[in-house]
Amino acid sequence: MAQTSHSQTLDCGPSLQDRAQLTRAILAFFAFAFAWSWGLGFATAQARAYSEALGTVLLIAAGLGPSIAGFAVVALFSTGAGWRAWLVRCLKWRIGWRWYALAFLAPPAVMLCALALHAALGGTIPALPAAGQLPLVVANFGLVLLTGGPLGEEFGWRGYAMPALTARLHWRAASLIVGAVWGLWHLPLFFMAGTPQSQMPITLFMINIVASSVVFGWLSEHTQRSVLPVMVMHTSLNAWAGMLIFPLAATGATYAFVTTLLVVIALVLLIRGGPRLQRSDSFMTIIPTGLLTV
Image (cartoon, rainbow, N blue to C red; front, side, top):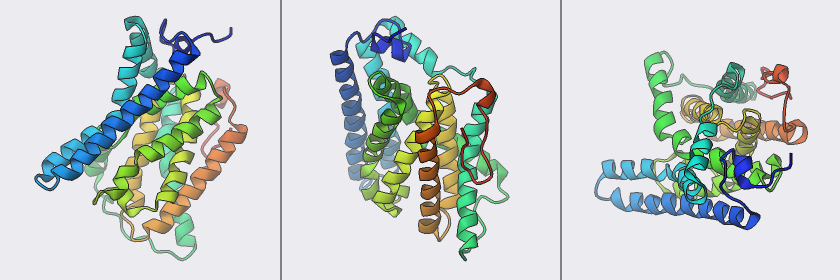
């Protein structure tokens, strides 16, 4: 059956009924997400001069912008029933355990591959701070989920923006657009002391995040657009990066290797990652190099 409205694409019931309204809703989402996050980001920079604790709270609040924008735009442009249906779709958890396993294991597989390449080319890998600290590692995943991006972003980027854009575009184009906007949304962090982005080349980060957006978009499309598996992957990516990549003195080299592998994976998915996989193929699989075969 042909899709006749944004509401059908979002599984939201009666909501956005025409293309013009859909365009307004998408633009409203992006404007809201940037205004909230960049506004609080500016406030963070000012508050740090008086209170580091207040600055930290504001920075965490700034990171909630995309998800708050997603909730707000769906509420503004749909009925109450549509909003509830959208939330049910976002929180759909019965998608198959293999997808959760893939979402959690793929990021460290790629990072370990990058570390192996770094070592093979003569680089050194010092002892990692989290080695032998299992409780710390477990706690770190919870902290990253709540304050490190996934909860504050994914109801927006993959919960709202991807489905909204795929009402007009193919998922491949939608994931690239979301990736570009996602990267720009992070821009203020490059000018804040103490953030991971302040130690990264902007161009390399943008390439990395657009490639990541393709992987996240592919995962979303194959898991009934549930936000949960994408949040697992986002949490795993950020948490493992904090433990495996960023603590190293050779962060630049290893991050470049990670980005290269992500670009290869993204290209494979863009070329071969069809709109739907058979259930039996859903975990076929993540191979030791970290490349997904589809």
